[in-house]
Length: 519
Image (cartoon, rainbow, N blue to C red; front, side, top):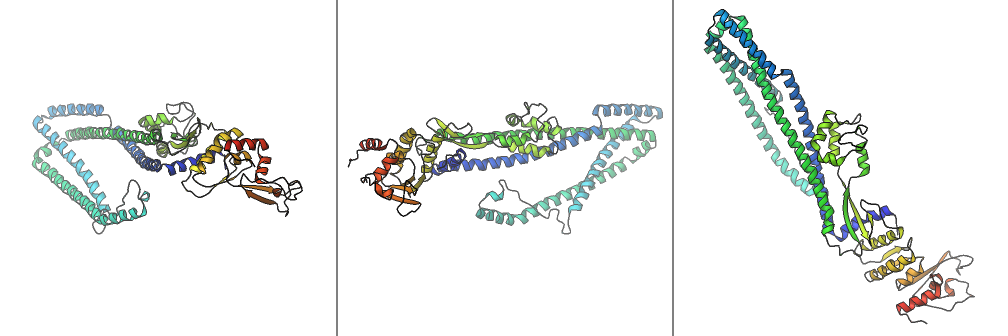
């Protein structure tokens, strides 16, 4: 019987699950929930980085467009020049204002026509010879289809196949309608521009004759368009920023939910009667795995002190508390990662890094497994291992125990092993190999087999390396000093007394305690 601490720890979970299937059910549910939550976190991190890149692109575009205040100031200056030209050339103020309004209207429509042309051409390049824009659809399930039983996978795939063509047809219909809408909108705008130019032909031609005025009006139109674009991009920037906040909040919710699921599992045994186990109380705990945290440490710059690396070690609790700030610092480089580490992958791995679930047990105020170091002595571990062996299944066939006395002192044998064996042997036959006669006698063995290894002082009559003698505790024979066979020279009881700690007296005391009749 092994007293190895690692081997004993590994037995705790399967034995607990075997005796309390409701715990196994909750454990499996929690594992599935953790997997689901981590899948969501991965997608959210990817979405956050995509939006953060869009945010940078919009900022760059706003920067390229210029400052709104500078553009407004420049526009105001040009409008003063226009007023000056109007006075200089005695242009009709009403007509000039009308010309500015017409020019701006045409400029806005031309801008929209230009964008529609780009989008229409892009869609046209996607369309195949059959007029389809989308030729294939891939379905992504959460959780992934592989996590379902095979029979359910087949049913899902069959239904998806049925709906595939319908959905593809509907999507193509939507795109086709949108394409036609854009073509129609472009046509309407082009006609509107034509109509505006035709209906205001006189005013346009009159004002175009003054090239200086024309140039200035075009500049004011350009400034107006850029200012409008800045406002549009600023709104877009604010929308993206709101999306980033929402994604960060969702990540935080996922992290909290995952911890709650694990904590619920860990507290389950605290609120559950454990009458199935004799003198053993099991617990479920969780912690950050040190080895895996070290893997995280090796990918981040731990030399520079930051909010998330305060003492050269990544503070995962702080990261889980402030995912928004951590993502921003990783993205901007305020929190550096080591060379060759991809930022998005690193952030994903940090957030999906989950506390490990540990199983522990307590027996007579000593514990093994779980977070803390074991307080069980080798002898106590041996007793604990024996209890686990006997609790491992509810089978009634014979149980073989090999030397349970290893690492146990006499007191542990009498106080713990003996009473335990006497109780359990009522439930199933126990075959025990032991060097300790105290254990054999104390547990009231019904049948004893004494083994002898052939030697100069302990001969076997046939010269075989091992011979055996079996019988009950009560079996005794006068010692035959002339016998050439060690086993046959005396009875079972006499062999036991010879091996038994304390000899004949210990055996007689044991007889009195067990109410045996002395021959």
